[in-house]
Every structure is written in C-alpha cells, then in structure tokens.
Image 1 (cartoon, chains in turn orange, yellow):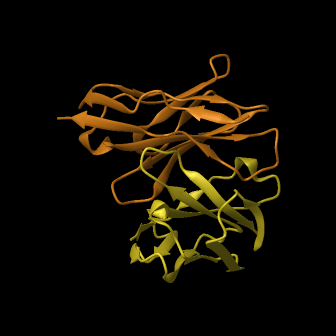
Image 2 (cartoon, one colour):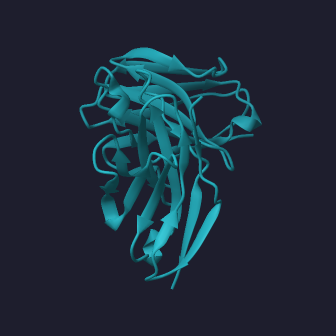
Length: 115
Length: 116
C-alpha cells in the first residue's frame, strides 16, 4: 500500500539557520515525490518534485529536496531559513507501479521560523 | 493562484440546504480533482476527472455530487450535509496526459465550508 509519513508535526528554526522537513514513503513501484507549501487561508503551492534522475532536486523559493532510495526518504531542505518560510508543508507520493492520478499526502509539518 | 480559481471562498450552510462549489482552471489542463482538507487529517482525495470522465470516486458519500461539464470547470454539488463535512475543499488540476503519474497538480485557494 502507498503511504507517506511526516514524522514531525512542527519544526522550529531560527532565521538564517538551515532547515529540514522530513518525509518518508512506501510504494510498490518507482516513487514520484512532491512537496507543497500551504500558507494560511490559501491553497497548496507546488514547490518541487522528483521523478527520476539526479537525487537532489531544486525548487521554488530556494528549497531543495534529496531523494534517498535506500532510506525511502525525500527530505525538504533550505540552507538559510526566512521568517516568510513559516507555513504548513506537505509531502506527497504517487506510485509509479500504477497508472493513476492519485496522490497520497502526508499529514503536514508546520514550519515556524523565528526572527 | 490565478491558475485555478474557486468560488465561493467561504460558505456557511444548514444541513437541509443545497449549494454548489465551483472550480475553474485557466491552465489548459485536462484533469481536475476535488480534495477535502480537515484539521489534523491528511488531504483526502474525493473525485478525479480526466478529459471530463470521472476516473476516481474515493468512497465519497452521495450527499457530495461532482459535475465536470468541460475540462476547465468542475463543480461539487452539496445537499443534506452533516456538521462533520465542515472542512476546506480544494480543487486541483493537472495536465492529464495518459500515464499521468508524473503530472504536477496545481491547487486553487479552497472553499472553507461550515455546516451548521
């Protein structure tokens, strides 16, 4: 069965410090992995995705994510956090073994960046 | 967010009312989705339409009725809802190519629904 886990409900980081938001997944076939961000009273905004190729994916707003097949992880990272990065972050996976549109989302991690 | 628009942004309705949520995408996509977002729960996929055909119904109660008249518009008709249906309802769209596993979904801002 397909699943995504975001083990941290909240991550706190000081502005200027590096941040990591964790995500692990479970699928039958090749994973197609996505990160989205949600600001208050807004929809989800696409940040980046991994389909194939280079394990380090670069996305919007200076975010990047590293695909690690052996650890079945796709952690979101940023070298230097901004207060404006404070939001709710969602990891999602689609199972490449199936011809499906279905995205499985994690429960979300709230990132709080303090000045 | 102008790629996918949703109206209304907020809706309060009684359990006996009938209302509809509207979604429109301006991205030239062929697949559209309805999701339900409740507090402390993962996003729940409700319905998927691909080239106007419903391809997924994720065991959604019949009090929710989707309609997709064309690839740009998606509706969610609501009737005799329950208080537990109160949530943020998100619409999304994607390219909808065959074998669309790699497609990115783009979301609208959502409709905040409160059922009294």
